[in-house]
Image 1 (cartoon, rainbow, N blue to C red):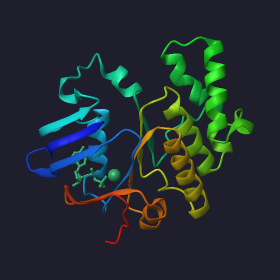
Image 2: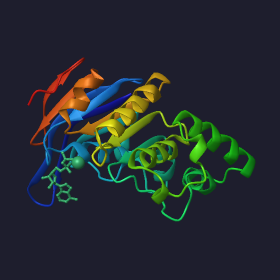
Image 3: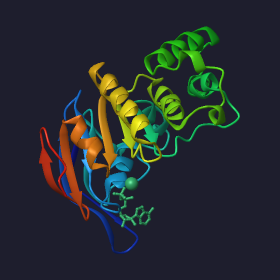
Image 4: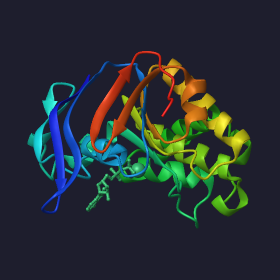
Length: 226
Ligand SMILES: Nc1ncnc2c1ncn2[C@@H]1O[C@H](COP(=O)(O)OP(=O)(O)O)[C@@H](O)[C@H]1O
Ligand SMILES: [Mg+2]
């Protein structure tokens, strides 16, 4: 369960990125956050990963007030949340396998465990055949699949996707969205930020529309019409 309670975020003196936002998200939901550029979508997601802290109000994740999470607890908090971005952010000198394995190495898992987990997760994202490829040898869609695999490797309760299809063509976009829907079917909560109308309308799940830092619409099964 994720809750934003009267959350505002002000950057600097007077840049109001979020204004009195109230949202509750249940486990297993697929929520699309839409709105034009600069309306606060990324900021909303960053409050959950604690890349940013709220200026007012509270963000609550599984009954924990994120305002109370200390620096020391951050790595553990972040393992419970998978994140993917528009620009993939893969390590260029590591193969697909190694990019996914890296997160498990950092967490101190054994080699055997790592091989098993990575193979399993690459299978889910449909990349078993390409485990030896370097990012530069993969298409944009395939690179995003590696990033998704890496995000899922700690079995997070939630996957956050910030404009994940922004660098992809129509076909790759559909494939990535279908993969996100599949991951959601397998039980992971998804929060997707996008300004792509077609994508959101095709997903046909909950839509939260943002405008200038405010939630202006929150629909269970919405279409994005602005
Ligand atoms: N680190 C930052 N410092 C100052 N202003 C920021 C920062 N990040 C975002 N903003 C501002 O906050 C507002 C919302 O930005 P953002 O959350 O990135 O929106 P979106 O993801 O919808 O494009 C914008 O006006 C943006 O310029
Ligand atoms: Mg953004």
